[in-house]
Image 1 (cartoon, rainbow, N blue to C red):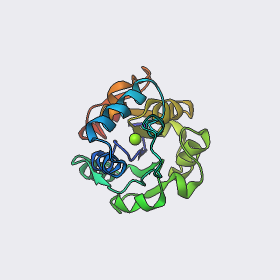
Image 2 (image 1 turned 90 degrees about the horizontal axis):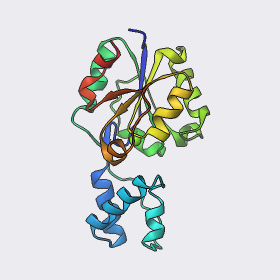
Image 3 (image 1 turned 120 degrees about the vertical axis):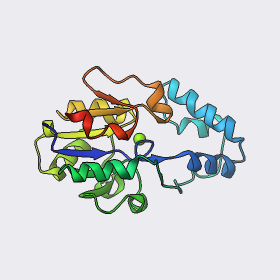
Image 4 (image 1 turned 135 degrees about the vertical axis):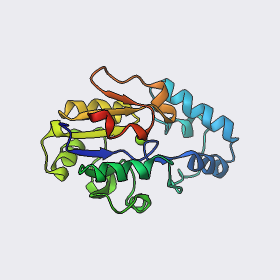
Length: 192
Ligand SMILES: [Mg+2]
């Protein structure tokens, strides 16, 4: 196996954001179905989900993500990777506060806020590689967003693994060089 380190995105890769989006809808006084559909519309148009606030003409400040609910396959996957002697990291575009939702047995947990750089910046992926102490081609990044996770990871010379879940994961099509999975149960076997 060429891959020696695997680093995971957080939102919709390890963490189910459903309750968070429901809380946003409730805080904005918008029916949940309406909000979810508008987020899907933004994704399909290739726009940021932040656009939805504009369409709804919402004045209240955006709600900080408040629920970090791991998908059922997340912790077993992290454990399997660690047991396979892979270096395991977790980092996504998020605040430092959300680092607390990640199991502590992994080798590192970080956030864009802690690093002061966000995906898809090349500096974000250079930092990932530096944290692992490996060569880029030995480091895999697993994520659900093609434009934020997959394309920049490949550009950095890393192995990119696209997980088809979460609204972006179903709408966006990864480039052929990316490995594709449907659940985290396929990691780390997908590297063999
Ligand atoms: Mg994500």
